Structures are given as C-alpha cells and as structure tokens.
Length: 431
Image 1 (tube, rainbow, N blue to C red):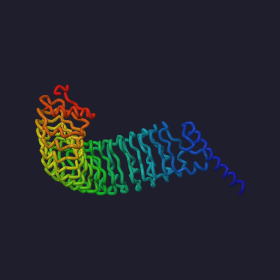
Image 2: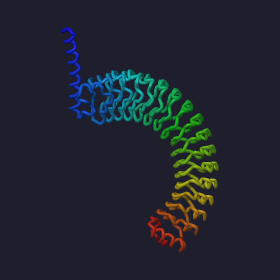
Image 3: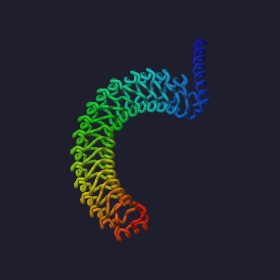
Image 4: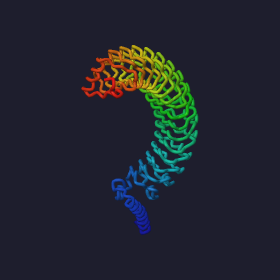
C-alpha cells in the first residue's frame, strides 16, 4: 500500500471514528444504555434494531443516520417535533415506531425507505402526510391514528399491500373512493374521524375481518357493507345512525356485533341471519321493538339492550336458550313474556328501571341466576315461584314503592342473606 493510499485510509478511519465518538457522547448525555446503542465499533456498525423510546429526546443527531444496517427504529414517546431528512439514509428500515413523539411533520425523504413494511406514527400532531409516503409500496401496516389530519390523499390507493390501517381520532369527514383499492386489508380502524358518509367502495375490502367505524356522524351504512362477509369484528356505533341496510344479514361470520348510542328505531329482520353471534350489544339506541327473527340467534350468550324504548319483548326471546346474560334495564317494559322461563342458563338478569307491573311465574325456572336486578319498577307483588331462585348472590328489589312480600318470600330473602347474598330492599321495611 503506497503512502497516499495509507493516508487516505487513515483519514477515512478518522472520520468514521469521529462521528462514532460524537454519537457515543450524545448517547452518554441522554442516558442511552450500552445495550441500546453499543459503544463498540463493530457492534455499532452491525446494529439492526435501535430502541431509544421514552428518553425525552428533543432531536436526533445526524450521526445516528450513519447506522445504515438498521431495520427497526423506535423513537416513540419522545419530544422530537420532527424527523430529520437524513432518515432517508436508512434504506434497510422495515419498521419505524414514532408514536406519541410530538411530531408535527414528516420529511419527504421518508419516501426513500422503500423496504418499509410498518409505519407507526399515532398520537402525534401531524396535519398532513408527505406525498412521498404513498410511494412506499411494501407497507403492510400504517398507523396514523390520533393526529390532526383533515384530509386523506387519494394516493392512499397506491398502498395496495396494506393489511392493517388505523386512522381513528383524526378529522377526515370523508374518505377518498380510492380506499377501495386496499383489497388486502384485514383490519380497518376509522372510528372517531367525523365521517359523514361511508363510501360504497368499502365493499371492495372483502378480506376485512375487523372494521371499526364507531363515533362518527353516519346516518346510514352503504348496502355494500354486506360484501364484507369475512368480518369477525364490527363496531358501528354512531349517534346519528338511523337505519341498517338489509345486507347486514350477509355478515354471517360475526361472533359479536356492537351498535350503541344511535338513533336506530328498529333492527332489520335480516339480523336473524347472523347465526354465529354470541354477543349482541344494542345498548342505548331508540329501539321500540325487536324483530321476531331475534329468535334465530341461538348461539348468543349475551344480549344487551339497555337504554332503549322497548314496550315488550317478542316471545321468540325464549329460543335464546344459551343466554347467560340478559340486560334490558332502562326500557318501557310493562310485562315479560312467559317464554322468558326457557332461558335456563341465565346467570345475570337486569330488568331494573322499566315499568313492570308483574313478573311471570316462569321466572322461577331461572334457577342458575346469581344476579337479579328488578329495582325501580311498578311491582306490587312477586310471583310465588321466585323463591326457587336459591343461587342468587345479588338481588335488588328497591324502589318498587307498592311492593308487598309474602311470608314465604320474606323467609326466602332471609335465607339468601344468610348464604351471603347482597339484598337491596328499600329500608327493608317490608321485612
């Protein structure tokens, strides 16, 4: 090796060592451990994963972006405000985690990271996304939730490899039709983004298994929702929602369905097609009746109908023989159908805050009950058969102002108490 070559090599080594020394000094100053950032030259240059999250960092040194073997970078929970343009040097990156880092913008150079498969930038202060981001053709997971974004570019349709897209907590109000090009999506979170309408192109996303569209301003759902036949999770709770399309009945793989806090006055009869349902949560709507087809949901174990306007239950309720929990409190019920006695697997039954004037004798068949709330009704008496309920550990009877107990019922309550049951009976004056 001649002298010139030797001198050049020494100069190159010196430059390399200089940036490393500066990087190590920065790491020492910010209490970044040896395990996180090796203080050994060989290990440093071979580093593939760097986690410097939760360090209250306000900026990242330029030297950090000489670590060109990095495949995963985690800078979450810092105080960065921005990522430097030199992040574009880290072309081997497959994952960037930068959630809750106070970011206000992303550099265009993020488009250089063509190997990126996961980008997690939730809970920042981003107001726009750089166009270059939509050129990251290998992205499979994108989390931009809880930022300050008001518009989603039509170029989102370029990210055709996405399987998970989380956008909740922004203020989009509408989605571009190009969302329908993301046909590999299995999970889509678009709740609480102020949506006024849901584009019919949503029906193209036939691989979806989880869809979250609650807390928006939707009045209706497009019929194309019925194309999403692989769904196993659907949350469509929206306070302005007035109707469900009949096509909801196509979603026959759903084990759970939540439709809460809406203006729904009735459920379509096609709800009866959802025969895999085990949990149906329709609390706090405006329902005045349930369709007879509810009786087809024979796999259901929890039925939650609190806070509606039901004046009666259909007799078909008695076909739901797997129910363990039935919550119908805060409705307008005057009576319960005798078929309620067929629900012999019930352990929790909530019927308080209705207008019940009587209970059917068949309630005595619910011998597995451990919790029974019938307070705040208009009951004057209880059926004699109620004393068959000997497994109760919580019984609430208060605020039935005209309620008179028989001697047998008084003895039943005493026995329950002696077995540890918590009995709520206003002032216990009837005992």
